[in-house]
Length: 418
Image 1 (cartoon, helix red, strand yellow):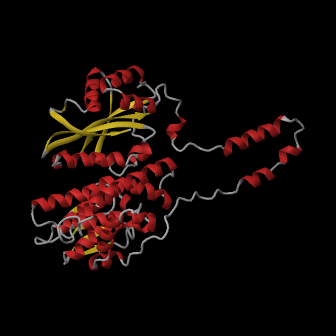
Image 2 (cartoon, one colour):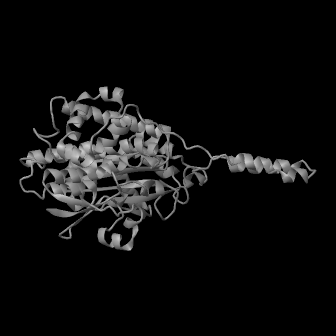
Image 3 (cartoon, helix red, strand yellow):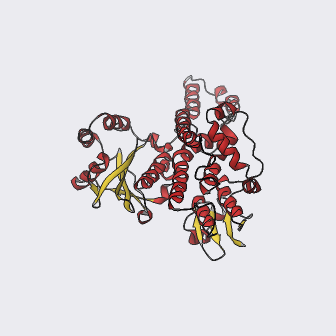
């Protein structure tokens, strides 16, 4: 039975989970082979239908429209009433969601930060890469402890949690988890091997081969355009003054100077270094740190404050799940670490909570910086630049201290980006 069509670029592992789920449930899902990334999903017709340019996207034969791979897989898993993928009871279903969210929020972001520059997507930064590698290791240790005595993540058979998590780790094992690395996590590797060799998984992704050596970032070769410039020396024959060659040298030096990685690096030096604020926040009680902040921050030119709210608060359930969701955004903001500081808090109670917070952003433009908008979760939140008066300072102070309430709901937990 054909239930719909998925739109994405070829060989996207994030699509695997939905197609594998369909195989398990005996559903036929088409993959649009005419989809052109950056073209099809940018048309007015696409935006009108799906609301955003994100992929993968799904359109059901009944008109159902869904974005995001996890949501598509969840929908397909529940299309079969007696599916073995969704758990036998409420506890199992909760545990399935627990492990899906853990891998998606704790492992996927740093793993992407590690891998994407290797394949030419995004800027490479050695410090950022090292931090990402360490975070992946720490979270794999959590998986290792869980899987030491278990064949599957939940229960005694393959569930949506296994399919989703294995799809997320697919490129890790294929590109950067070499033999020596895999020895550190024998239980996770055994589990991953089990899942990717299931008939339904292989029917979608094919035979899997582990990487032999860890893929490394290789800087692109520089185009050798300097030599022709040096050969172009007609001016040296004409002028007799020594000043002109010096002027030429100055021009060459300017052209060859490294360009800033962000346009924010072109801004005048801030009166308050952001790193100093981060140290104040980390090393002092929040009231002391906030007093220092208001005495030193320049909100005219150097920085701006933005109020952040999750768009789908009415869909939030467990407090810990909401906090994991907030952490997912923080993990995806690596590019902004040099230019931003923020706190998101979870306020309320189970099945009635919200995610809200404030960010300090470098510069005072009316548009959010690219380093933040580039994050995968950016569109799931509203970002509103605020005028910081005394009333707003009180609200910011409560959020940065994780104390008090937001919109009448007591603050229970939170995440810091620094």
